[in-house]
Every structure is written in C-alpha cells, then in structure tokens.
Amino acid sequence: EAGSLSTPEVEQAYRDVTDGLKNAPLGEVVPSASELPFAAPDDAKGAFWRGRIYLVADNIVSAQDAREVIAHEMIGHYGLAGFFGSRLVAELEHIHAINPSVRSAAANWRRANQDLISEWRSKYGITDEAVHARSIEEALASMAEKGRVLKGWRRLAAVLQTLLRKMGATKWADSLEFRTDAEALLALKKADMFVRRGMTEAMQISDAAYAMFVRKMSASSGPEQIKSATGNNGNFDPE
Image (cartoon, rainbow, N blue to C red):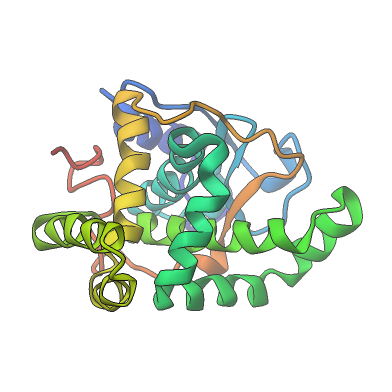
C-alpha cells in the first residue's frame, strides 16, 4: 500500500526494538490484515494473540509508527499478562477505580470498538466483565504506545501512594493518582520488566480466542509528540 512500510522494513523495526530483551515474544509481520491467522479488521496495525505479536505492514506508515505499535502490543498486552498472570483483571480494575484518565480512555475505547465487541459477543460469548477489563488494558496499552514511563518524581509518587493505601489513606492516594498516573505507570513498568528481564508474579500468557488489536484509528500520537516507549534508538528505555 502506498505510504506504508514494506514487510522487511517492519521486520527490521521489530528486531531493533527487541534486540537485547531477555523475554521478548515471537513476532510475525504480514503484508495485510487479511493474511493474519485470525479474523481481523482491515485497519488492524498489530495484534497480540496466543503469545505472539503480529504486525501488518500495509497499515504501518513509518519506523516510528512501527515502534509505537510494538510498544502497545508488547508492553500493554504481552507484558501486563505475563507479569500479573491470573491477577491481571484485579490489577486492571484497581487502576480503573483510582485513575480517572484511564476510566475515560477505557470508555472511549469501548465506544470506538462496538463492531469488535459485538463480534466477540456473537462468536465467543465474551462477557461484559471481560469487555470492561479489555478496555482498561487497551487504555494502559495506549499509555505504553505514547511513551509514558515511570521516572523521577512519579516513581516516588508510586511508592508514596502504595504506603498511603497500606495506611488506609485511600482518598489521599486517589488524589495523588489523579495528578500523577503513577500507579498506572507502575503497572506498565512491571510489564516492561517482564519483557526485558523475564520478571513475573505468575507467568501466564493470554490464550483468548480473540486477538488483541491496535487499529489505525487508535493511533493518536505523532512522531513529534513522543520518542516512543522504546526510547530514541528503538530500544526499551533502560533503568
């Protein structure tokens, strides 16, 4: 497709991003969405399905775009599932409860993807609870795609918010989360640790019947807005 990367170019972008990562998933690049090994919308740019990341070359327009899609799938889906395992839904619902920006992004995702949700309900019997959790995961994956990382004062805020919750000062912790997104970013940091080092609470990769997609319409950040979750050179940002 005119204006898109070739399959070899996307394959090179994937190699650049995953170089040196201890626990990167397998990646596969296909020319078009119709060549994915599962049903997918025509505008799918990437997908996470049964432990593997798929990238669609026709829908990826630049190396920066490729890095963003890889970050979305690798950190936001593969990494979260791998680190939290069976606790993932509980962690997602906790973040949803305390973070208004995540709540808003999750609601927006549900509104924008009614076509996929209807298909999943029809084909796979997906429940409202599963849709809700999926929308929260997509909100966090978008944060990863936009290069949001836990650094500096936000790292300190995450520690402080954890202590406040242990002390029972939930309202204070929620107030800080509104300003910092620290606990949401901490979850992504843990996902990054799973990808980079294999660190995990309970290693468990999603075996859902449906794939996790990032679509053209969900890409809201351009190359001038972010340096990508993977850093300036295409590698995940080091400690």
